[in-house]
Length: 172
Image 1: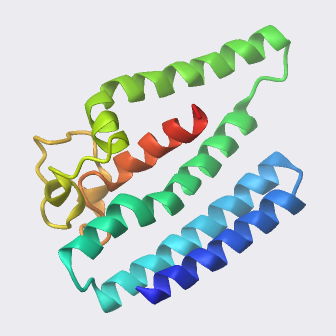
Image 2: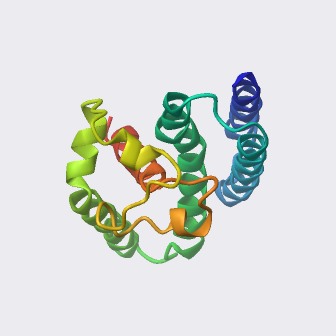
């Protein structure tokens, strides 16, 4: 969809402006959350209005496009939560606090290792089950709560891709 490309351009411009011009980390996180939420709502409206021409386009959207925006939302929410609750004490207490968050990310990564490898190697075998709406199978992934709340704009694994991408980018 050409409209999705326009939404992405607008989003990228807004995020670049935010990252360049806002120094306060909490303010940056707050504004980043607003920008990403507004972008996801615009994408959702467009998807519901226009739908997808083919299953392949739908798979591409939920496997590649939506997670790029949604991962930024998770990033800014986590940034806000981590920084707003960060202890103001010693460097040792701050290191312990941050290591606790790293341990949680590692646990998520380990719990989703099979899907991480599926995604990283560019596999497509299960794309129809993972990235088409209405194909959710709780046996495939019991931790994907998002598709229960918005079946029109979520699939069983589009939110998992977000976290996989987050791990990939953080470890690159």
